[in-house]
Length: 188
Image (cartoon, rainbow, N blue to C red; front, top):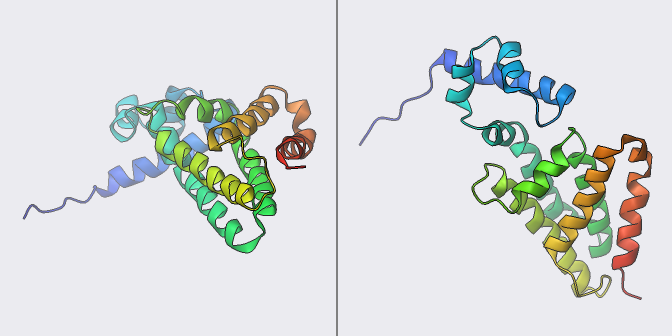
């Protein structure tokens, strides 16, 4: 049986420094942040960055994957705690809040949902599925119109997140915009 090699301590430190630097640089510059700036801030060369993260998507997945996984898990928790429409409402507000944490993140989410080769695709698909399950429960309860699916919902809330990303002055209207979408989804 082959022996499992553990990463060297310096490799683990470099990865942690890269992720810390990425978090700071992406906060400043958005999801299209300069990889060179990230490497420089981490105090490593570009080769080290690419050894740990072969693509920008890999870096974003490492930076955001846990956040997305937590949001998908949150959908399941809300489904167990609240009536279906209230669970869907609460989750959509949390989703849009999370999708606007970094400039360009909403657009990255929308782009990667259709790109199965993207490192972020699995996380985005899990988010869409989580929202789709909440939507289906609200539909089964007769609270939401039956003629839409999780992809429609993901596109609508992604549009709100992208709008806020592109026009930050609209950020105070975020919750109202989500509520307007939900009002349009409700059954009569």
